Length: 126
Image (cartoon, rainbow, N blue to C red):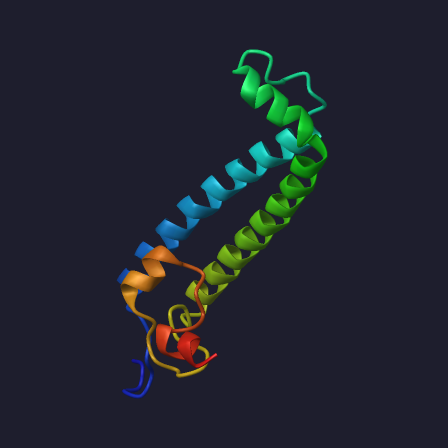
């Protein structure tokens, strides 16, 4: 039995968050694959069938889009890593506890940002 001063989400809540995070990881990995395939793409899956405006834009921004795709991929990989870390916190039952205030992070916030480690209160202090 947990002592009274231990603040944490119930196992039922943790289980719901775990499901949510697994879904987010799956989607994020799918998105990462799309980003990577767009990045690796050498034009064989080009914009020939799209409007001329977009084609011109596309040709003019090929280098820029390669850079932004690699930035997107890096951000996506970090997102996936953060989500996986959240799963670890679920396993050790520290998930959803603000690392600054030690209070529970609002459930709505966790539903929107499941890898959050700071409450809004702590985030505003930064």
